[in-house]
Image (cartoon, rainbow, N blue to C red; front, side, top):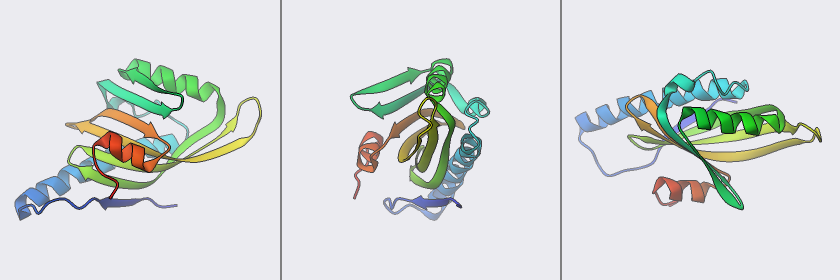
Length: 156
């Protein structure tokens, strides 16, 4: 399935500001497309160079939130996650540009339980924040409204 890119409506901007914003957000989306191409293949380490050294990654997993600070801790958490599953994949369906530095990725997460063999699939909403050309934060949610609230935007 192909991915879509959309933009949330914002206040009116001048043509030159809009062109700059479009170029910046297109760069952000291209970075995330590269990340999700790797993740769709189950390769979560291939794009670590696109992440800021001080990246913050959270998973909104009831009953509590899981937080990883820095590349090494984020990769350690991913390795812990991957140990529980076989063929874990995260495939992007849509990139929603929320602002110059924030993109909401809507993705399908698929895997087979390592012990049970049971296949699981879930839609996830990942808020990705940027500083320059590096990803500074990823916040994983199973609920769109919670993801948007975490990004500081309304669902409307």
